[in-house]
Image (tube, rainbow, N blue to C red; front, side):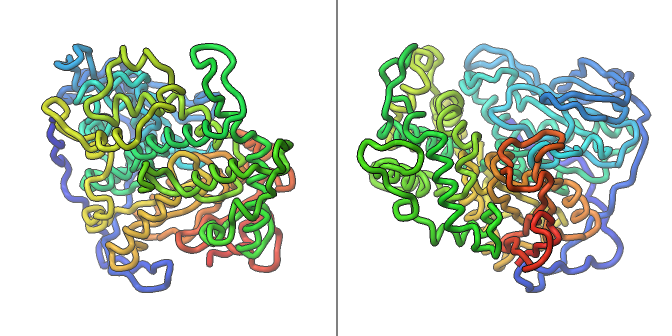
Length: 581
């Protein structure tokens, strides 16, 4: 097993004088922590010659190109980018002694000519496997800026494998790289490359991402607190193996009430889980949640800001009309449907009724298309492979896995016998999946806190794969571990209605990174973040923004446990008409 790379940087300088004490959300004074000095800008002095000038252990730079300012298209969206140096390369090329295949940690870096003195590690989602464009997303759906545009030097990587299929989980080191060691290897390399390119190392370093990228960020907050000053974790799947297992349980739940079977193909004759609850029935469910809970925050506006209060008052059995036998018209739910949906809200369990993952919030965003995508689509295409090869020790064989289908795998999945394999080791797989995927102690972030580092977490309350209720439970435990409040170094922002990282009936466009920088380098603790809807005219329109909303509706996202409440007067489409209480 590769050892954690030692810190290569000197301890950062502190701003002279004591930092101002921050105030917790509840109003109590917090201990004074260091405020880190602000980054100072620089100019690019090397680019196309970096391949010969940079001496980086175990690293090959395959190309260095100066890219003129202009449009850069990422995921179908073209944005103006500054002139920058594009560096592509790889680290730690090797041949696996287990599967005989070649592996390396692939990466790209984009180094702006006019640099703000900061480094951003872009942690990516899914099971990684490709080097996506290194722009540095700042949070939410289709944000209007990114780290590269702000002047950060940005890195993106494939986390140690260059294939999207999960077969790489057969290699023990590829598992460790994916879990956390790719971050440990890339970070000192990237900082040394930055030093060569600009003549100085970065003054401040940030690590951020959403989904699995949020998991990378939270793991980094625990494992690499000496390397990063600010951590931005969106929809953090820090219990990802359990969440993937819960997906198999959901498939089985939906299959139990499916009203039709798959007509053709390898799954012909199997339950068609998409017939369990239709899109219209999910919309009905969302509307009934809104009807019960919308006004709990002081205004009936289609947004359930007080989602925790909603859980105490909404009941799917009593608040949704029950269908007469044989009726299925989208205006009611059958009793079996209600039972399954109540089970899914309550969370996956084993045969003894013991929880294997968290509960999920009832939120109007259950009507979002992304919600159904994860429950009906990704549960059959992504999660089975991840479980079979990455989150199980020892992993499956490729031949055995390809002999079945995702649906059949999920329907036959035995949680009771599979759960222990998440924590298992053997002579080849000496680190358990749970160990390499999760923070070593998820409520001990004392190293980050003690050196003045800051953590910002955000999560959509209607996330269908990684439970926002799980993140809330973790954050409350973090507060307890820090004397009842962690507001002087960690803050959590729930995004009402938002699905996984974006989408749903939500104000899901926001910039967390600027607020994180201001907190780290200026001591400006964020009490709220302004979020906008992406209606007509947005850079990427969210088609699930209700027609009754203004196209640019704005709301404050409040530092937990506060929620946005209407002041009683003012434009209901403006964030200024709401306060965090």
